[in-house]
Image (cartoon, rainbow, N blue to C red; front, side):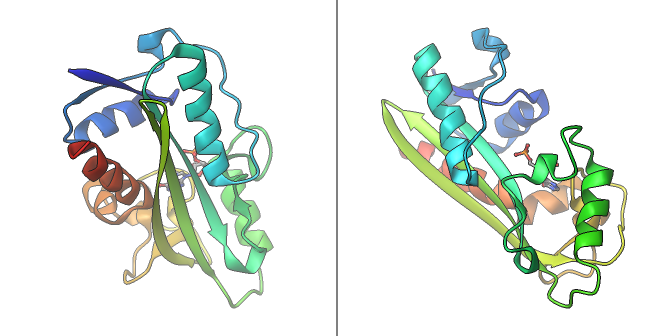
Length: 192
Ligand code: IMP
């Protein structure tokens, strides 16, 4: 079976990808190829970061691979936190601090529209492909729910009266940005 490296340091994401992808490829982690260094993520866009990570692994390890990057894009904040979502409130990548800063920056704002954007960049047989998944929604005024991670407690997806953090993983994974991008990758690889 051909192998495909998922360029992420997060073993949960590799496990999730192995579950979601129904493809004739074995998905390997960075640990599987002995890549332990920090992969640069310095692009100004979500797509740029996904491509940067995939190119780094493809070029340095000579493997077929894919990488993903996700950001929360808020209209009233001119697209912030966007590509800076993980470190919005500082280098500690603290989800509570990030949400508090976001709610603070949106104080008094009536336009609460936002979207999660995931881009997966795939490099296979030397060619690059990107797949984008978007979940539209709004930023509510107070955190609600205990499940999920990151900005889930303040993000209410369109058509729902609950936040991502009030949904179980199965329910969120049916409508999430990441699930949509993974589904596009799945379809592409099935007919590759
Ligand atoms: P990363 O690209 O997975 O590192 O995510 C970038 C930032 O977006 C981090 O702050 C994550 O916590 C946040 N994030 C990514 N995916 C989700 C999600 O599905 N729900 C909530 N926050 C997310």
